[in-house]
Length: 151
Image 1 (cartoon, rainbow, N blue to C red):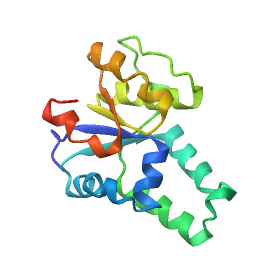
Image 2 (cartoon, helix red, strand yellow; image 1 turned 60 degrees about the horizontal axis):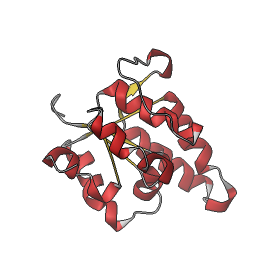
Image 3 (cartoon, rainbow, N blue to C red; image 1 turned 120 degrees about the horizontal axis):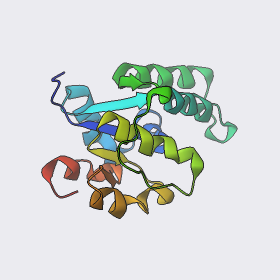
Image 4 (cartoon, one colour; image 1 turned 90 degrees about the vertical axis):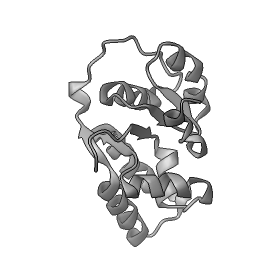
């Protein structure tokens, strides 16, 4: 992996699309992660949320499916940051869903070009993070826009 690969943050629902549901709209994103074209970063609290969500009964995942999803996550996640080491040079917007604030913090902390999400509370902040030149917030199918200058 090249150290100049653009960094991305994926929220938990995007990880579900990629690693559990094999969403075809995310196929190019997964290919880019696997090829090292982009670097997907996470941190401890995001990984903990991932593991907790995989145990939700409504997902109806078997133990084997959960373990496979955790293994895939751990294989492709890079730059695991500590939530205790967060730096706040610029003022981040506050997400109305407090559980999602960690993804904004990680994007800033990691110097990510984009936070990929389908979450409405995060998407509502997209104009502000772009205006403040922090990072872009995009739907996962639009991931290329963050590095093409259209994001």
